[in-house]
Image (cartoon, rainbow, N blue to C red; front, side):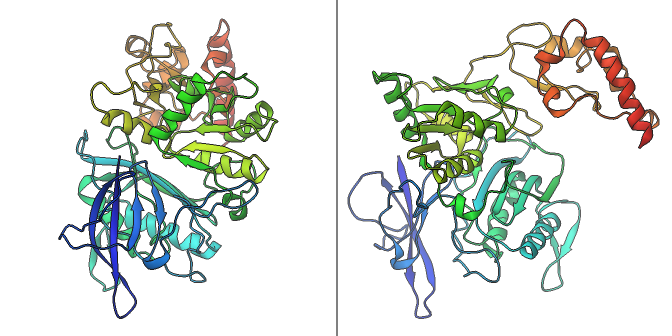
Length: 476
């Protein structure tokens, strides 16, 4: 694996200036050279390809990584920034604008899809101001904004979902390919975000995955309780895909009892694991992240038993790992960048390399509803039982049932769950839907459990729910 290094020198004014880049094979000893063949030894940044910044150093602050211990915050982190992101905190140096390269070259429609997250403190006022700036300047490519010099400035045309709060930022985005570098430039010139956003976690497959940009001031993940910065400082140990594979292979080969073996746990919701999962992982039958944390505590009461966890893009495991370590769990490790980073790693492997330990698709919370990691098909169509791993939502938005549907059933049932009510409403115009307004048919837990919805009496239940939903809709 190659490790990229960026080198700086210090000017008379005390500013760090990027002088060049070099590549070094991990573990290789020797000199470091810049692109212009001048030698420097002052390592400013260490960047790896696992989906994030391993470590940020500035000038003479470069130091060896320190190990973490139970009950104590980690000393360094890909995602944790201990300096505040508002006017009360120290301003960080900008990171290199090309830190996200190489950019993905294969895209269906001219969009890059990516995600990132970072933990740092902000005041409520800073959160609101950041939300408004991103909503205005990142979205709606058909409009312009006025820059600080009163000249029109094009927006970035970003679509996606961003959560900001007093503990940081969590973003899933699709960006026009011509604006990807401009997005990084915006980040590194913004006082709140400068130096705080790790390398973009590129998707496995690229296309416009969202309809619009929504920036919300809300918790980064739905943990069920407030997770403060003191807790988030107790981060898990981050493993790159090769290290993750090594750990899983070692567990498989070890001759130890189940109760003492490291617990490998899928920290995603139950429906996500239906279409893809790692070999040997425990996939709890849970509907929410809050339930998942409770399940891990129940499965692993021994706080000395090692825990290995993974999720979609990493943030759920960063939070869960911090919560568990703060609770006294001694060894918690996680896959950096989640299944997304692992999937990219698998795609980049040369022919003849070891097979992927993840089988199937990675579920995504966007229009794609999944991206393939391997060709394994682990699930079946919820309507006819044929092998299939394509999630869909019922075309009747009042139903919106999340289920797996093959191409034949999609055509037969007009991309609905198959009830006559949903087929009829799916064919209505927008004006007809407004005139025949209907509330949601299902609560969250029912909507994600098609195996409980589809049954002998499900048509009758849909009709009964529809009558109640229509009443609620009229009341609005």
